[in-house]
Every structure is written in structure tokens, then in C-alpha cells.
Image (tube, rainbow, N blue to C red):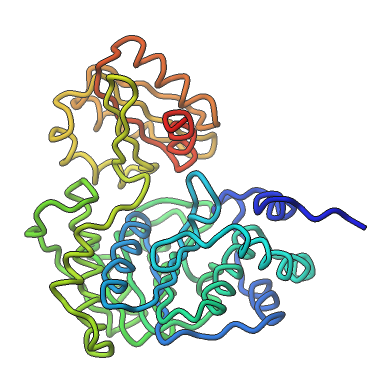
Length: 378
């Protein structure tokens, strides 16, 4: 008898690379075949979120606001930082490993038969857990694009679109309008659709797909959000537009309480502050030029200047075009074209050794954030 894998990652490792985009397999056929193998009940409300940057932050804010009304909320985001079950939360709490393992034991044979990817199987696992828990609301963050993403294989009632920029060009197209066209499909079949501010040519693409799309102006009167960064006002305003609309369907939503919950919400890996001895370290998963540009207005409030800003990229993605933007905010700018587990840590340790009480900012993927956090937390 074949021994059962002992961990969630051991189960899912059978399906290949866990990286959300390197693992991307466009199309809904495998996902639909996988979901056909078990009962999955639609909640009272399902919300899909797509965009280039800000999806996770918006999803966390929206979930917190809905939870304040006593609604049971399932939140699916990706990728995770330290543990897989961060991806699947119910009322803000990651689902227990024992429940996920039991779910994988049932789902993995179906995944193999369907030829499903890691991300597709993780998405099915989230839907299974939400169904079994009887959540009122599901919030699904798209992995790559929207048209052929696993999260859009199931119907939804509401769609949110965060700022769109160039990213994942290998899959979504080389132009901003092509990428917008792919992400527009997050709105398919949805009654209510909201978008953060976008460039005019992006708005044209989105509204041609869904004429009822409502564009949300950014409210800059949020004050101090628990998630640092002025760019979070964009995400907060988008989540708030959704909450005000949902008030009509869910009278239990108390708007002042929802606004307070939204303001107090935190999501990991977004200008996350950590202490390393006497040094101050901020970590952010900014991994494209648009994300870097969004951070710039907030950097001087953290350090003026930083002793070092460290930028980590992987072999298929470069931030070379963003380095000139960061240079005025730091004494030293350190770049590494490798976000593997040890490289970010060693580079940061070198800078802290140089200045033990300095202020440092590390930018890269969630892999970068995880590599540094694991050691700082230990």
C-alpha cells in the first residue's frame, strides 16, 4: 500500500511547481472536471477579484469588513508566505491542516485524473472547504489574468478589478490593453462590477466588456490604515464601494463597523515591518514597475533615506527599469537577480552587518518575503 503524504505540500508537490504563474495552465476544462467529482455548494455571495497589483490587500479588507457584520466569510488568496493554509481562510483564520489533509485525500485522485495543476487543485480545495463550512460569502483572488484562470471556472455575483499594469506578459499579452482584455473576464456573469481608477484605454476595454462597470474614485480621507502605504487608499476605496453596494443585499452590514474593520485590517507582505536586532526592516512583495511606483509616495515616511533598499528578482522577471525610481530614497541600492531561499537572507544580513541599527527595505516576490521572514521569526 502506498504511503500517504504526511503534509499538504507533499500532496501538492505531486502536481509540480507551486508558483502561481509558472504553474499556470490556461483553460477551465481541468478545473471543471475536477469540481465535477465532488459536491460544491454555491454560497449566498461569491466575489471574484482580479487585477495586477492590490488584489490580496483588497480581498483582505473586504473580508474583514464583511466579517464585522457577522457574516461567515471564506477568503482564498495566493500565493502563501510561510504556510499553505494561509491561502484558505474562514473568518480570517487559516483552515486547520488536518481539514486540508482530509480534503486533499479525497481531491487528489480527482486532480490526477483531470490533469489539474497545483493552483487548480488548491482552488478546488478552497471551494470544498468553504462549501463544507457553509460560508455566507466567498472571496476568490485570481491567480493569473481572469479569462482562463481557475477562479473564474465557477460563477460569481460580484467582481472587483484592482489597478492593471504590465505583468505576466508571457501569458496575458505584451500590451496593456491585451492584459486588460484578459482581466475583464473576471466580470463575466456578475451583477455588480467595480474597478479602481485605470488609464483611459484600460477603462475603454473594461467597459466594452461590461457596460455596467462602476469606476471607483480613490478616497484619500482614510487616515491611517493598518496596512501602511498611500497606495492602500486605492484598495480600501475599491473594497468600500463593494461594501456599500452589498449593504442593499445584506442589511446586517453596519457601515461604521465595516469601515472600522477595513481600516484595522492587515495583510502579510505589504510593507510589513520586522525588527532584526537593532535594525528596522520593511518587506514588500512589489515585483513589477507599477508596484514599485505605488510604493514611492510612502517611502520617505518610513526612512529618509533608507540605509539600503534591496531588490530581488527571478530569472524570468526583471526590475531593472525600476531601479532609477528607488535610487533617490536610499544610500545603497542592492540588486540580486535571484529570489531563491538563501539569496535574500544573505544579502540582507550583509547590509545589517554593515549597519546594525540601519533601516532597510527588501522588495521582491512573496518568495523573497518568505525567505527573510522565516529567519527573522526564528
